[in-house]
Length: 316
Image (cartoon, rainbow, N blue to C red; front, side, top):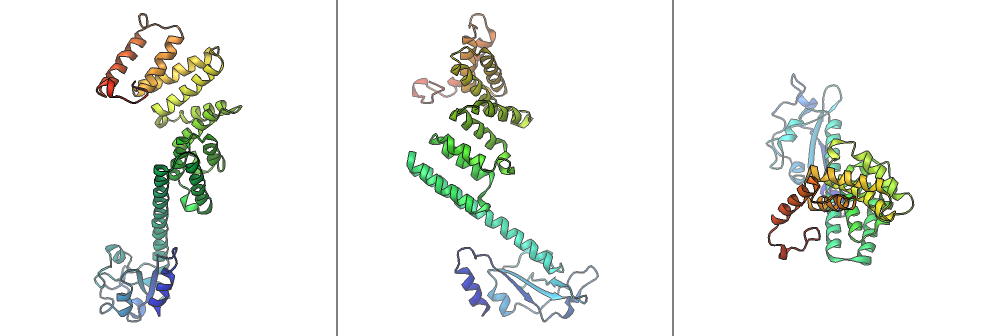
């Protein structure tokens, strides 16, 4: 009858994890030792119940003299018994059961996350444009229905998927739905949120994006090229949109691109920095900084091999 009911539960997709608790009648009052653990000679061998539950989480228990249910030792009785099972020998059954449920919850969350990310990768590989947007909305609906999917990794991958189809409005809406949630406050998510605000470019978006990024950059661990150069990009866009009259934004863009280039020399930061320096009136003949940037960029490009074979925008 037990096997029948377990089989019925497994017939449902969401009921694959089953825990069987069994009171061991062969161990009257548990036979506790001095340290409260069960005597190692519990039981005389595997019972029919133990053998039939070898593929499930099986927790035999008995009741001590104080009426407390305690787990019994199953080590050596079943091939599936693990060392961790014997470590719980003599513990209160409620504590052991609580630990099992916590482990199942963690494993289930990991399974759902991996399944979701697999579906998302397939969608990004097969679909483009409007078709991908429709699919992303369906996947996003899964997050709304199942809180187990609400993780920073999944949110970040959704943001990147929306970015690939230039759907900045959906990027913003995704974060704005729960802006104060702990997962939404992760630095990479905040960076792409600011990126989307800058690209959407509604009134006030750029100032909000700058406030987000400058707050993030107060933390030493966030002072990396991606973060620094995004600040530079936002200020550069403000300068361009002012018809090249907002010199304050130009100078701030120079500052942030310079910091990004100093932290880790790269083509993106170096080309933007050099361009803005020239626009501000610097020349290669008179500026040692411009000459240094030029030599560094030549070295970086040379490491990539034959220039004629390069396709990357920032190289060619």
